[in-house]
Image (cartoon, rainbow, N blue to C red):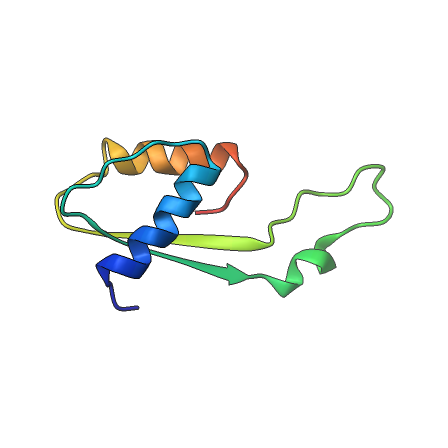
Length: 87
């Protein structure tokens, strides 16, 4: 997947706004892609009293630029996890 700053930043901004996160990204290129999982509905076990948690989308986050693994990226992954978004 090729990184391009304009479309990726707009996708990330929309995602972060939906998570309630305010963000300033000076000179940071971000690529976000989602992939639908059709097998999610096949994981349902009708014998269980409550359905198992399945995911519809998987998010791949890729950063180009300064190392952000211990600050921004960790915060982003924690926010995605709280919203039950697989990243």
